[in-house]
Length: 121
Image (cartoon, rainbow, N blue to C red; front, side, top):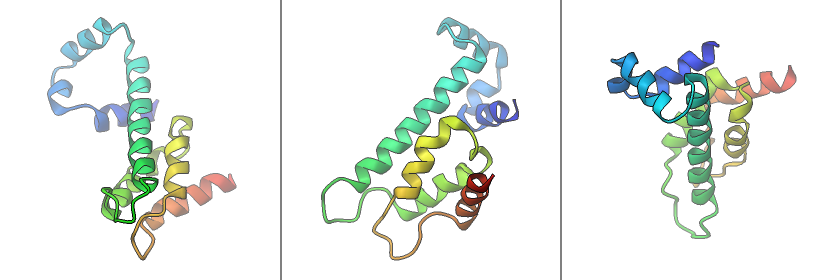
């Protein structure tokens, strides 16, 4: 699928990308096919981002969190081409519920529009 290729590009380091044979050997040694490996990689990245955002939001401290508004905005932009991917749902929900310390909206307007369009479909 097109999103698998996109994720491979976004989530793999250039060192691994430069030698596909070694990458395939590495993935095989882990007991995965390429599709399974990148699917697990996506789930792990989504889980990590969700955890980071939730810990920041619910730290219980009355200080500005460690996650900057710029970082949250960047994550929302990263989600744009993948907005309808089911594995991304927990991250989308977390982003939509995120209330940072910023006085203005931290999510990109493009992200909000894309979520709205996907929801309406």
